[in-house]
Image (cartoon, rainbow, N blue to C red; front, side, top):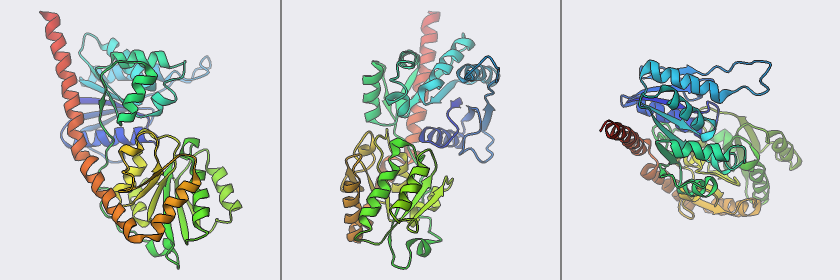
Amino acid sequence: MRIGIACYPTYGGSGVVATELGLALAEIGHEVHFLAYEPPIRLTSFHSNIFYHQVGVPDYPLFRYPPYALSLATKMAEVVDQYEIQLLHVHYAIPHAASAWMAKEMVAPRKLGVVVTLHGTDITIVGQDASYKRVTRFTLDRADGVTTVSNYLRDETRRVIETNKKIEVIPNFIDLNRFDAHPCPDAQALHGENDELLLVHTSNFRPVKRVGDVVEAMALVAREVPVKLLLIGDGPDRPAVEDRVKELGLAKKVSFLGSQESVERILPCADVFVLPSIYESFGLAALEAMASGLPVVATNTGGIPEVVEDGVTGFLVSPRNPKALARAIREMALDPDRRRAMGQAARARAEELFDIRKILPIYVAHYERVLEGLAGRSQAAVV
């Protein structure tokens, strides 16, 4: 197949999943064309089946906000015509679904399949805004295929967007080869002389991630157990979190590592992964930690319970509750045998349910059904 993929190229679950999916499709022989305003962050090496098409956005004085959706639709149509693309797979509905619908109209009567994968905030936050809700429903209803990354998000999409569109749940995935028991080169230095419990958190430091709750929980645990914390990522809440770390006198126990491309080299160094988000449609960061053999302490919200099995691969607690986080972390600190068993169970669950080698055929089958449906409608029209 010849497939176009549109996504946001920056750090974030939707862009990572879109890029990893495209790379995996190319590996099994499909031709993949990425469309974005800059190269996706995970698109770092050459592959003969991978192409990147930059979407330029003219900066005219008349436009207060550059019309990216229109530029993207135009580029989609150009690439579809030039490379005879059979299917566009767009990640994150806004504005990609609308751009894909416009591109499909522009290239008619050429048959072009459109698949939309919803990742979370494109429905639960942005999509239900009155400015976007109607156009989101319109473009989803006209897509040839719609998928979500969790059962929770499928149900929320139907409720929020008020659509009866058939939606297939295809969970996020992970390349287990990337997270295959990498040794930690600095384990002793990171854990310190007292072999402190090493916590780790990774996110984009937005308010929804509640990074400050990790610090508050750590401060409570530190009263009883030697503990250190690695914070991976960057974003708007980082200055406030840094200030709070200083106020609590934890500056020597908390390391801010910033954005890191190779988290698979860092995660195995830790003992416990902490994810206190108010909302996660899936919890890709938690899955990466599980693939690294870490137990997870997370919140029982959104799609996280579909990833983390409470009491087996970690603990789930209520959101906005640093005390509950601290209790779960303390329990793991005081029972290292159980902590290690949970880490092993976490890796096993990642292998069983979220291995890209198991998820990739599901996407390919979805594409094939979309293209078969287009061919069937075309034959029916001729008759």
